[in-house]
Image (cartoon, rainbow, N blue to C red; front, side, top):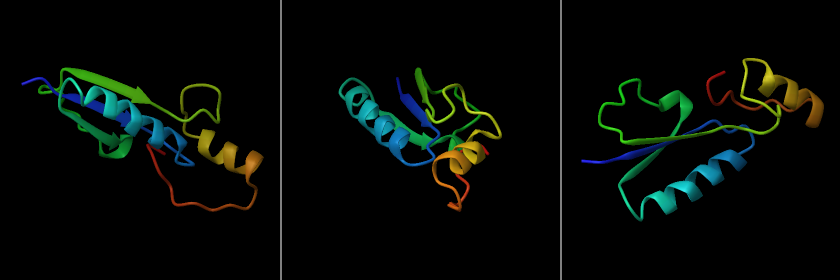
Length: 86
């Protein structure tokens, strides 16, 4: 059976919203799961399509320090629970 997986990392929630919107479209043609990168499976044998999205605050692919750098630059003093792969 074909199945899609949308994997996202989201710091402020925007990338998560986009991931769910993408999944709505994909759901019209195949079953789809939406997961935070931390919960994404390693075994993708039963997955036909993988879509990956990440935050835009670092203007590049997420790195270990990008969430911290974004908080310090855009929202100093904000302490949020760690999300994503970091």
